[in-house]
Length: 204
Image (tube, rainbow, N blue to C red; front, side, top):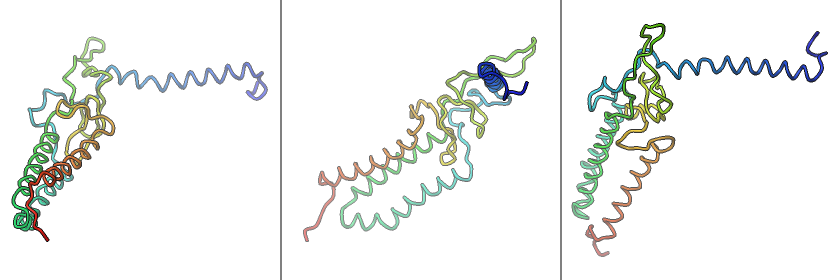
């Protein structure tokens, strides 16, 4: 009998069976991924203390920009500021640049939360790979590794952004929040120096 001529109760039962079958088919791959890690994944023990990042083209250009702008500031702007206001602003700018470069280097090279090597995944008495590290870890295709609290892979710093001990927590919007806080913090330091009389001013 065509479905169009079936009673409404039987038609609903047929639709429920189709939906259950589709749900079972969609959940099957997820279940397999939950127990076995992606073949060829990299693990925490494969890296050194500062070897987690990768210097791609975007990251290299970011470092060049980071070095170029302060250099231009010191060559073109700082001499005039020192003549008019003394060396306080120049020293503050150098300190902020040093901190920015230090944290940039640390975020680019330190552990973003890469999963430790798990136990072998055994099927039929033979090792087929490694077990999945758990629900807290997500797989990153760009770096071919599992990262705890993975948010995204950042080409700008050349590293993954996840739950790292250095800047935890770094989920969701927090990567952008760190940048905003750094900019706002720099402005606040400059305002504090100016308000506290750290700059010499000349009467009109």
